[in-house]
Length: 351
Image (cartoon, rainbow, N blue to C red):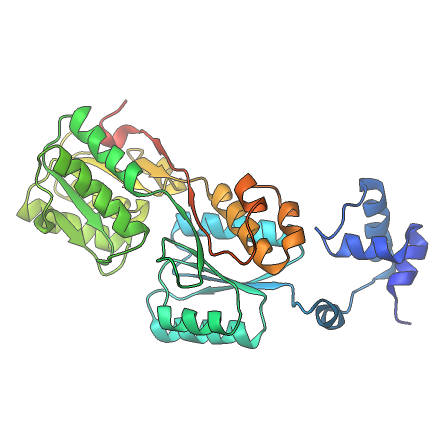
């Protein structure tokens, strides 16, 4: 016999509407006692809601596509985990795709998300503007976790990058007396978080009257440990820096490894500072001085903005991560900057 929502309601001693509220988190508040009775009845009866019928009624599949470049990067995986936790609490299923730097893989995932009729897309890192523009024209809400140009119809959430990077380099100059500070980063770009970090590095050096031309920068094909290792070898042979600024913790691990291979020590011979403030920064030896945003703060603001686009009356129920998110029109293109903080550790010379 098919178990219905009414059967669950009778066993739990609540109305069918309350059963719906429990099964659709975030739709209406339900007391803890009523929620527990409903959940107990659901388990006892083996009730499974008809997901297809529910999606048709709500004109929603209660699913979100999340596309990331690489989950091996702990800064990205931390944000992805937080987004998944919040989405789960709101009753959404998350479809995750990793695309690396493969345009064909990226396009295939985007097409698949459309075919699955996801309610919205979250893109972390680089993306193909022409594909995103096409999806926006078709009415699919898209939010990018990187700095993007305004006027494209895409909203964004991203950590502050310029000022914190500049502060890291100024710290090396003022507090530790470094005057030859090189930079190791990923692909050369005109916009985005990585570009802002390089700009912050350059700004601090320019203010101090120090070398900041491209001979002091290594642009890797990818922001990986291998590129950090390769770039450090190149810079040590060409410009002999006394300190290295890296635009990601992943690359910084490669930087430290390359320095050690030259029988040099961090920070005695070469200081290292980084960005992301991921778990890698804490686990590295020596511990990495790194600037970054709280991944849960990024995830909460991301989901707040997404809920505005999907259902304005639910935005305030997604966890209340930001007052600004609750007061913004769901039709408005938004670009939110999450505050960044610096954690000083041994790699820069601090005790």
